Image 1 (cartoon, helix red, strand yellow):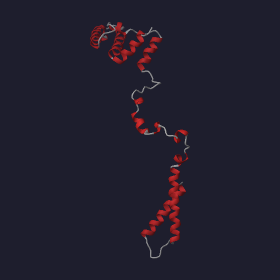
Image 2 (cartoon, rainbow, N blue to C red):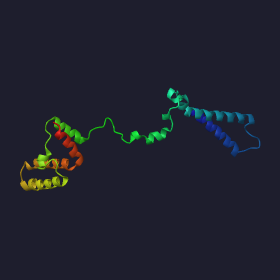
Image 3 (cartoon, rainbow, N blue to C red):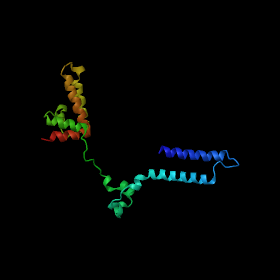
Image 4 (tube, rainbow, N blue to C red):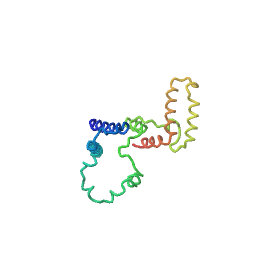
Length: 179
């Protein structure tokens, strides 16, 4: 390929040299000019064939030879298919919360965050937030000076984070109710 590029470049350089420094008597005879032109044309055609070799050499399948409706207007079908509207990944990875709750359920140590906060299972976000604030005021380590209050606060904060977020709460409820 480098050889072809070199020959093509030299041919172009030679012709441009003749145009710029035109002499009364041409350096290249008309027969030689014809040979150079044909050679450069063959090189250009060779380059195009080399670039398109995959398209040219591709074997046709029976599907390609026949005319099916699925072959027509493939781009429209690709971008406007009804199947892509409700696409769901088959091997979808569960969220980190789901993994966490699943593992805790398997080890039988999934805490009941509703009992920790002291709210019912159908409590609203406002009720959860109100109860969380009450518990924080009561059990904050700066207020109680108790060594176990830090652990209790960590449980309360975790319970609040899970129950206040609707997505996490739905996942938690799914694993809490599984027996």
